[in-house]
Length: 298
Image 1 (spheres, rainbow, N blue to C red):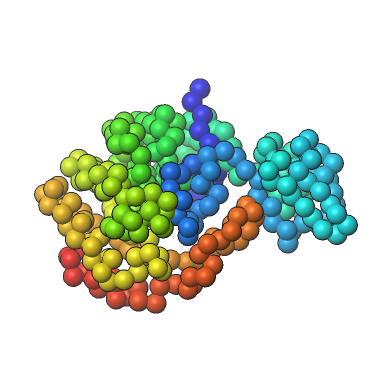
Image 2: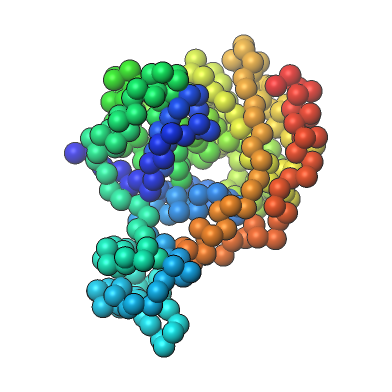
């Protein structure tokens, strides 16, 4: 039985591909984008989220934690994450909902049982199921098995990917994918590394290879202040997608995605620093950048 590590299944999604969809979020990512909107998807293993404002100080988690990771020091609540093995016992006893387990092992059949409940909505809206993350391509075997089952059942399949992995991983999934939505963040490799922890050469090569397939592709740019929120940065990406369109012999779509800071509370609950806190809440010149993209015919 093939299993994957899933951290969320979002039903009635309308932003992760055409129509009404279910989005299956898989844990694990090969990039470390400092603004990541899904930080709970970065690490491959399950982990505990703790929301202090919900804690009522009952101490039940302290009693059941086998690793001694939960403490009450007077009125102060302490969570020693380095001792936690994410067994989930504290989550089961926390009736206040301050603790939650992010990431669970699911069999392909388990995921299918959940997402196929919405089959009538997929059929009526032209929707389907999208694999996202994290980076869904990293869980190659699970993703391939799930996508194959969905496609065999007549469900439209899509993935959201950043493209940073050996091409062979994605290549094995392509026969079972109806749409690829791929992020492009920065054409300058050094700046890409500074923002995401990795250079961009492998990502650009993935994009080139995708452009030479027949599979529908949508390229997307998360517009991030200090990373790519200038006309020059967006112009460089648009020119690159223009080259990819020439490779395919047909125009490929390019979309800009606005920045937001809605993920800040997630970082707090995971005990991590939110490095994007100092950035403005949105990109003020977003309309200007859209005009740049339109100048290239997108």
